Image 1: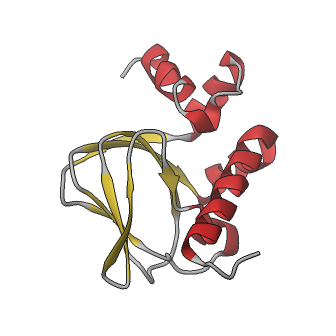
Image 2: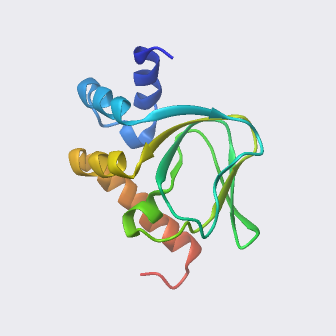
Length: 139
């Protein structure tokens, strides 16, 4: 994929919508882009967390304790919880269609969070929303 196409994809993702072109280039350099087939599990509940994923194309199913709790698609992201608290994965995420994702390893994720306050704030807001959605006693 050309660097311009990669930048266009990133610019179209709400997480990065506030970034200028120079910042998008920096983010693009941090991330690896991978294509995966339907049926591929990207994370497994209870496993160690090593990556953050941003969905560019396709759909994924999120399961906790064997029950579907969410569906993800273009613009969604996951994997931040285990990277932020260094704990195990809280869910299993499996591609239900072929997917294209950007992947950031732990060090690159930390760089993203440190260098881009708008992105960090968006990740933390989404994390808080997920907690509230799945835990009615969260406050």
